[in-house]
Image (cartoon, rainbow, N blue to C red; front, side):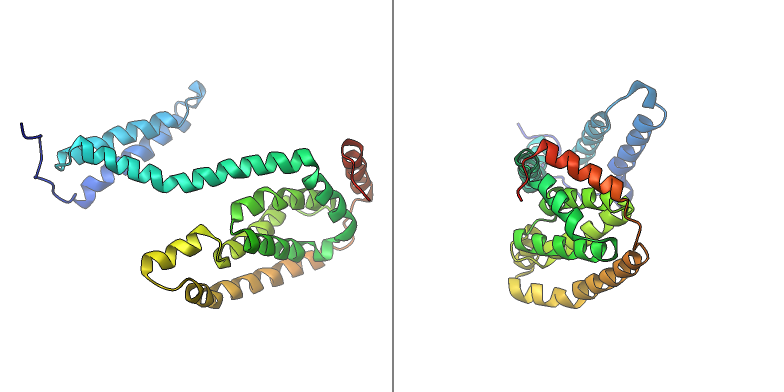
Length: 245
């Protein structure tokens, strides 16, 4: 028996293609705003939108098997990111339990000053991300330590986070080990190092501009260190972890 709609596939009209998107936005809004007192999770909205998208696809002539294969294909694409997140979670826990992150905070409070902290944080994250090829790993490990150092030096947390992200994404974009840096030339049929070399023209100036801005911000923050807070943080860290020297 021939399956319904088989062989009758047709490309969706723009308005038809927007139906699942509009439904998802509306469902998320209802979940977060009018129904927030029920503390519903956004998973309900996502599953409902998936059902609507599947129904639209079937109306366009796609069989359930094809829809299922499309779902599995989308999941497989996201698996790399999921694995990276799992590894980052393990890495963060290991670094914290081993005292690596606290040690970095303790040493950073001794070595860094507010005037150079933001540019230094950007460069440190850029180098680590360039070596590892992962901005997420950098932000979740070295970035955590730098946030702690920034707190001790009296630097605004949003600005510190911006410096960390700036460096981490620069290194991720320029690293030959990065998954996205490898994926882009592979899909376009280009050479990896040609791709990296041409990105220097746009990514390099952006890093320089960021360093200049963070340098100006840091120059205006000289002398804002709360020594009592720094001493308190260092004592707390050294009391909980054996940091040598």
